[in-house]
Amino acid sequence: MKKIKIRWLTIVNALIYLFILAPLAVVIISSFHPGDVLLFPPKGFSWRWYEYVLTSGRYEEPFVSSIKIAIITTCVSLPVGTIIAYALARYDFRGKDAMQALFLSPLVVPTMLLGIGVLMMFSAMGLKMYFTRLVLAHIVLTIPYVVRTMLASFAGVKRLTEEAAIVLGASPFKTFFLVTLPQVKSALAASAFLSVIMSFDELVVALFLTGPGLTTLPMIIYSDTQFNLSPSLAAISSLTIMATVALGLIMVAAMRRKKKF
Amino acid sequence: MSQLLIANLCKKYGDNVVVDDLNLEVQSGEMVSLLGPSGCGKTTTLRMVAGLNEPTSGSIKLDGKELTVIPPHKRNVGLVFQNYALFPHLNVFDNVAFGLRRRGVPKREINKRVEEALHSVRLSGLESRMPAELSGGQQQRVALARTLVLQPPLVLFDEPLSNLDAKLRTILRVEIRKLQQEFGFTGIFVTHDQEEAMVLSDRIAVMNKGKIAQIGTPREVYTTPADEFVADFVGESNMLAAESAEDAGAHWRIRLAGGHAVMAPKREGVSQPKLVMIRPEAAELSNGQAAKEEEMNSLEGTVSFIQYNGSSYAVDVDIAGMEQPFKVKIQDARDELALRTGDKVKVRWAFRSTFIL
Image (cartoon, rainbow over the protein chains, first blue to last red):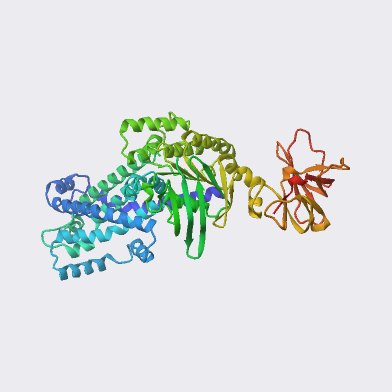
């Protein structure tokens, strides 16, 4: 009886993994199609489209823009989100519940609405710098993810260790950097990772806020699906997937090492 | 080595008074225990001295300097926590060096002092271990070293032994007492374990409902409790309600429930005895006719329960007309107890072991 149950669960598990991973596999496999039109399954094998992606220069600028936006966004959202999470975790103040609800429900507002709202606001303000306004919007988008991750992690830091540091002579400020933050290192890394990925991957708000001269990688991929359905699309996607997986693995490895204590 | 003076200290959370107008004076180099049940305000008092809780009102002075206006990280008061509160990301050496580094002590001196501190808590050689790799007793020793390395004039202990097993507790409490005498710091030790308080302290302050019910040497608190609460909380006791008392010269003749009567020495401050207290170890049991002795109280009853504790026996005796069984502790357990449950016995104790409240 028990054995059958386990086997059944295994099958369900396998199906779930298949459902998640199959689309990625399809993209990767079809990126090797030598022909001009995206096709699955591919007829033949070739590196042609990878060569094209890496040498044509078509994707270089959007890639660099996306990376820049993702990194600058994270440089702001990580510290700000961390401080907000710490305040929510440690202090009682007026409106705390409302603030917590706001930061813990990042998916409540559709990005479409956010995009329109932010566009109208920036237009009214006369802010026309595409790069800056996209970064600002991405900061708004990514902070909730940082807050959410850090809040859970701060809950695991014993208040007593902070009190011990204070009694031993560390100011509250020093205590935060010497005792609190080192205990949430892996959550910081995870938050940064999430924030970079969220921003790097973001399309909708980017479509609203950018203009001539600024294209992000998701934007060019999206435009390719509409006007240029060649395997180059699959190749650039595959490269992105690989880079993400590699980054993720490095993070996991780093966390494993730190878990020693 | 400093004198601590707590005056009119209060802590209220809304209408809930946790510490109620507390006054306490701790002499230089003295170790005072705050003993009481959970919720009596002892930990809150300690945390206010450390600066981790802010008093609602009152003053805390160390060597004449008002502490309440100094932020906690500048008070230079040691605090040892119940849950050790070691920094999990730092090894033993860095944990102990933490306070020294905050004070800008030169590196060479840090090495020397950390080494000495670890030596005094018998942890030499474990400098590079992480806290998670240590046993509970070792962790608490690191916490002790981390505090003592700073040579604070005042060290506060917040039930530091509660999380350890019984055997380790008895070892560590002696070590703490020896360290206190060696380093000569003034100490306040919060505990709910009366035995711990007895072993560790010069004086015990028994706390109840945010106030100090009695303060005195362990012997004073045990032999002459100030009220029913102290008598009941410190040590085991038989409390018998007095129905009436008549003057019999140097003694009171006290009538108890069930028509029994006992003699108790008079004592200053008690004009009308309400309670009679007899410690279980002051009483003895005899079956049959014992030789008549002067100055002994005696009650007849039936053995209802016997516990063997290794070094002693604890016997409950039901006495007609009394609600609670009379507890008798038989210290000498070398021979097997000749009593069985249901046996008729006489409980006897000296007049002078009868304490009135």
